[in-house]
Length: 259
Ligand code: MF3
Ligand code: CO
Ligand code: CO
Image 1: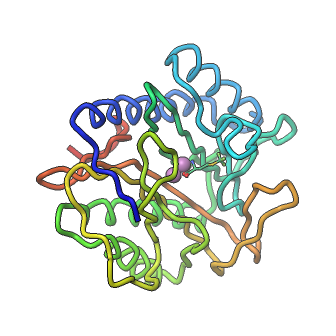
Image 2 (image 1 turned 90 degrees about the vertical axis):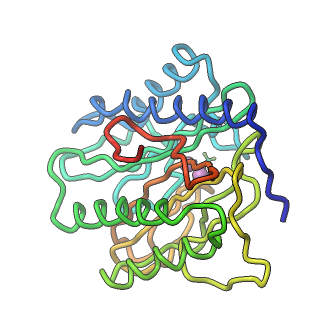
């Protein structure tokens, strides 16, 4: 495992990239309405990132991904491809996942949006998943073990009888989009070398929680990951910095509570 410790100069660039990614989610909110297509949302975000922010959307052409953002609707767990033919309708829930590159550094964040009024289950799953992310963020500080994150999220999900996706993890982030360490969201095998968090580490936490079983499958497009049982899935993501005293949420939006 090769976990990088960011220098003060790199941390400043991570702050800028994180803030830009968060701003895209704030910018797109009013457009997420019944009747909009995920292709239109992609175009608006792409234009904002490239023109207003003078930044680069990291997903575009990443390992062949064809668009600038991911839009994952209802039973899509992650990596949904925006499409001009995919119109959002009342009652949908959608995750929009934004990663920008600015000055060589990545900021990666996602949130759920309601399209009109969600069902009771959709709201419960969405709110739960955000609370699971927040509880995990609360654990982050120097000296804490990386595995605590997954253990905490799994325990919370078990209580609600929701399930935690295992195939996709949080990740170290910096000059590289996905770098060490892998951040498990479930209580998995803990190696003896369970990472001890230290100031200057940057990584994401991005739990994917299903209302039904945890199992997933990838569609023929090679990207779209869906729940095998077609149950609803939710995801929230932040990019974090371990500080001397705890954690800084680099992708914090103004509506959020962290200091
Ligand atoms: N933003 C996603 C993550 O949280 C990765 C998307 S990769 C893409 O790690 F190619 F699908 F865009
Ligand atoms: Co990520
Ligand atoms: Co992401």
